[in-house]
Image (cartoon, rainbow, N blue to C red; front, side, top):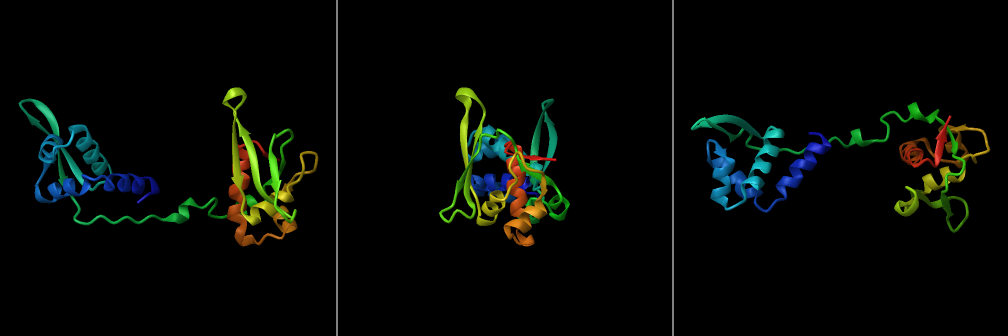
Length: 198
């Protein structure tokens, strides 16, 4: 199950009417949205959305039937157990951080960013960027982990030569095991036009 599918399932399972709808689906061979809605005294659109979502997740089977030449859908439960298993490894910044460790970067000129130094002045504790322009401009403050703060503390200035992520990590004394969180903030700051790559 993908993360998005699990999110949809979780969202619908949290509805206060979910248990009663599933009770109907377990006990009826098939049921239409209007039948279920009237049985549970719910709005038909509410039930229709629920049934469609479950059909999309292949928990229900949908069959179009005709009554007085007017088509409608009937839903049948096709599983008797629902398992939610999510592989969180696919959310990693990069499954092979070595692929991006050679990326050469530096701070972008006129990025309009504020790096806040931690108490001991050895690393940054946060970075503040501005998004948009004029009245639509908004401030975004990102609190940094200590490895991220050390990394950005050693980020080459806009006038300096580009350096690889790996070289900056070594200079900052950051372990290779922390590469994924470094790449996460690097990619975020590239998106915010704070960091540029060669």
